[in-house]
Amino acid sequence: MENIEKISRPSWDEYFMKLAWLVAERSTCVRHHVGAVIVRDKRILTTGYNGAAANIKDCLELGCLRNALNIPSGTRHEICRAIHAEQNAIIQAGTHGININGGTLYCTHSPCILCAKMIANAKIKRVVMSIEYPDETFKELFKEAGIEYVSMPIPDLTITQKK
Image (cartoon, rainbow, N blue to C red; front, side, top):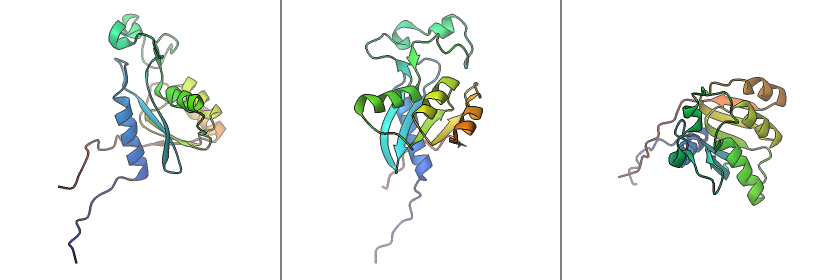
């Protein structure tokens, strides 16, 4: 019988969170690279990252408006060229006719209150995140809406492969 080497596999939460971090690499925000993945039944439904709307110049090209105006993170969300990662993942579902009702949203960062409202209306049932965003107002909204909220450490982002 062949000697089989034990391989450590990530949990499902670690796996999908790693994917959220990979998605974040597409971000065009100069402040935070944020990625989101919406999953149901262990299947990826949509992804999103923070960046300017389609066909609009982004902060990589124009510079950060929020930095120029010295606006602290977690405030004045309307003064930004970017659409948040969670919003983009939800928008992608709508654009492509994908039902995300009852899904889990994995996001590198906790949501702002605007994203939390969209998550509730999209009927997402669970949110898993790694980094706390300065705006914690989403917690009360999630509690009232019955949305499970899980905070987990940033997963090991190295890719392991058998030699």
